[in-house]
Amino acid sequence: MFNLVHISDLHFGREVPKVINGLKDILGEIQPERVIISGDLTQRAKHEEFSNAAHFLQSLNIPFFIVPGNHDLSAHRLIERFAYPWRKWKKYISTELEPLYTNDKYMVIGANTARRMGWYLDWSRGRINQYQVNNTISHLQNADSTQVRFLVAHHPFWLPAVYEFRHLIGGRDKALSQLSQHGLDIIMSGHVHMSYAEVVEGVIISHAGTTLSDRLIPEQPNSFNRITGDRSHLIIELFEWNGEHFISRKQQHFERTPSGWTRERVVK
Image (cartoon, rainbow, N blue to C red; front, top):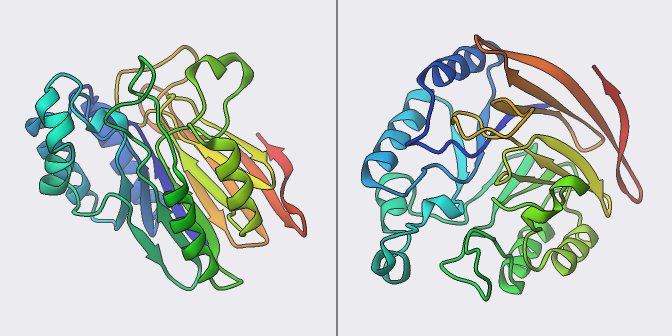
């Protein structure tokens, strides 16, 4: 059994101190072995925001795994965006944009899906390319049969119908088909500030909402997910902020079958 926490869209620059303290309190209670962060660490990719985010990560005293999001690229300083887009990330957060972590229980693969530009007006949209898919497959082929295989990316591989206007990650269909065939178990993402889990092509798509910021959407409070289990059975537990504390709202159970993962039951 492993015990992981998935947080996302921290948006330092729009962070809420009371929620930060509440997160630290609940992490002290549930004692995760690792914190997974799926991008948008900052709001405007400023030095101060990155510095404050780095201080927060260090203060957790828990190993963490992190990939960037679109807000971690400067939206207004265009020379920076195109000439040295990740210089601040590498200075304050990590020299790696697509990290890999593995132990005897699980493998976590990072994919940087944020792009400096795209052939569309909304440059916040993300993409996964064939090189990244091939790199992920290479790691999956080295996984032990008992390891749960995670891919961490910022942009969504599935959206509820009411939010499809936010756009799926570019290259989704081809990437998901190939990754499913090579044994990927879970994709952990963020970007849309919603928490949900769905099974697509036998792969669990697990999203975290905005964990620390005031950039909330209706009926979606600050939240994070706790993931526990092994390669036969997984539990995704949603924690939501109630104004004073993070509390457990529901658990979703998933069972692995010969054709991939399936939802087992929902416990409220």
